[in-house]
Length: 72
Image 1 (cartoon, one colour):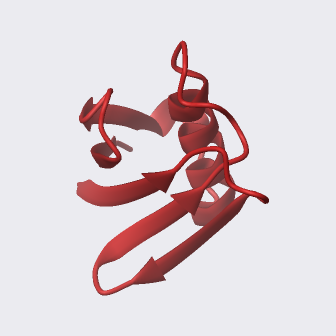
Image 2: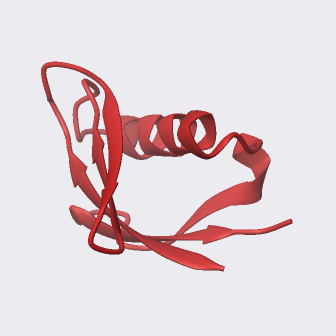
């Protein structure tokens, strides 16, 4: 299953919310060296209550809009 994620890096606090078929992830991590991507996977795994190993960024490594694949 694939989900669409909009990312806001360098946010004031870490937060995940779901609106209009999109997941909005706000992370305090900077968008350099893949730190924000690592944080996005961690925050989504906490929000969805699934292991991090089941989440993978499929599209949008360097973009604010990402497609994340959830495997079982």
